Image (cartoon, rainbow, N blue to C red; front, side, top):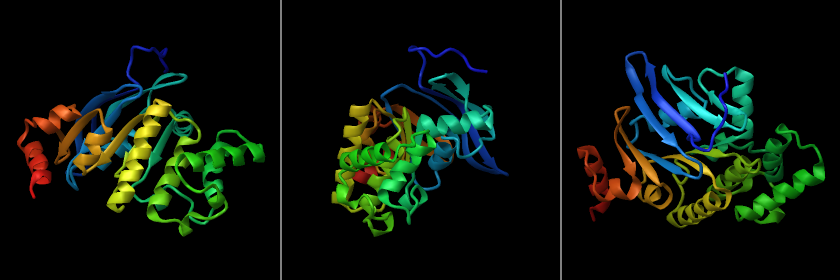
Length: 262
């Protein structure tokens, strides 16, 4: 059942999300709210449960317990209990997911323009000229030469593939985007360029974002708030600068001190 949307409710409300694999805990009892235009960082070492949490709240993995309420354009729905057609429609039209490996989010042997246009056509746009114009516009936005529109992603560098994946997700104007280690594996200079791009798009589009990363420098640059995860649980949360400048939990202190060591 949908409730009436309101400006006074969060865009996303996550309550007690847990995912178990037998006796192994993927994540346990995680809750938070995300407001329009806000970027939330989820940080922790490999195996901390941050990607499991992201997959649960983005609709890619069914949680064992909990609820994910999303304030869609049609009203607030529980993404864990909504009928499959409704859930897929919301994911296709109002949400986007950028994967750590661009190959998981792109069709590698389809042209760059085709990758961007595919999502537009899935949302009902059929006019070839309009699709191509929008694809060209988004290639420019993500700083890919428009002359590469007919080239396939397998001819692109890793950084270009990641920017193309971002364009593919944002072309339909989603309200929220989920990102899993968006700068992982990229050279430092390429990371900086991508982060500048993301920061600009978040501001320009008033975009909400949930971003998983192990890189605290990335979190400080992009995220308004963060959640620190360890062994599947949230051990600390708060405003990004506050948590990173004055960490309270021993694990967070360890993470912060590790990046300060020469």
